[in-house]
Length: 337
Image (tube, rainbow, N blue to C red; front, side, top):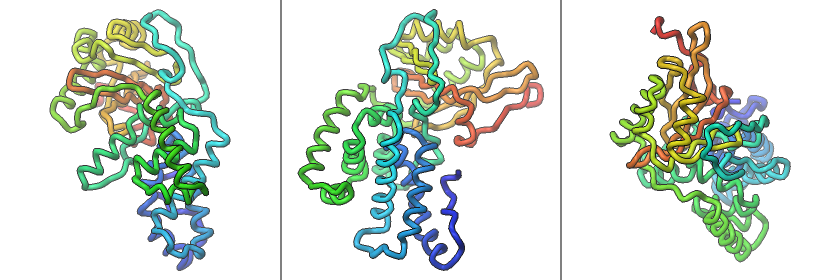
């Protein structure tokens, strides 16, 4: 279902007024639910359910809080219900230690509901406030989204509402039906747990900086040309490679490069890449050439690019992600370009 779509209800003055007032909040509510659930598919479903509930009770909305807060309360409660019936989503690095052996057989977890999903840039909040832009980028980083999934549901709610959305403790307490003392205790425990499970990543440079764009260009060129030497030049010594739905993941430039050389690169022109954005991070969509010369979707790679090179590749090997990112279903053979 489309994030921008309205709730499907009977037409009428109330429905039109409801849509006019609430549709502007749909995108940010989807991102909020994505933080909670780790999946944009689930977030879209939850927001749709929240809007149905909100429409049904719209005539009872008395304005004691803002419409935005009211919608957040409904969406958060739907998220809490959803979390009662879903296992925690993760990334390979959250399931076990890395290997430095590129010969190790890959192990697949076939259920896509086990993995954190990347967030298409079209769903991220849009604002003209530079301070809000920075905070928004930080709050949807894939490393943080994966770490949030380790928190118990109520701790997750409190941390997101207090530290990301800057709600007052009393507002969170009202939503959860508890006390401000309990909220503050939950927040303290959530911060401590997040500190333990969140990876210590070097601060990423701004996605728009020329140096970041240059590294991304070099990375794309290395993949499209199957150029191992060029790839070595853009990866840091501590590079990590994760490839959901593969449970096995690799750490260290030597292991990562040997794995890519052995299992990915099959000659110049076999892979084509389109630049995109995932979780406000640089990303690329990889297309593999078929026997008919047509390039078909294979992977969406979210990259952690620092001032000293690429430190993490999260390669989501799921062609089903491409429509959400607005990516083409195929690319023409090279001769037709």
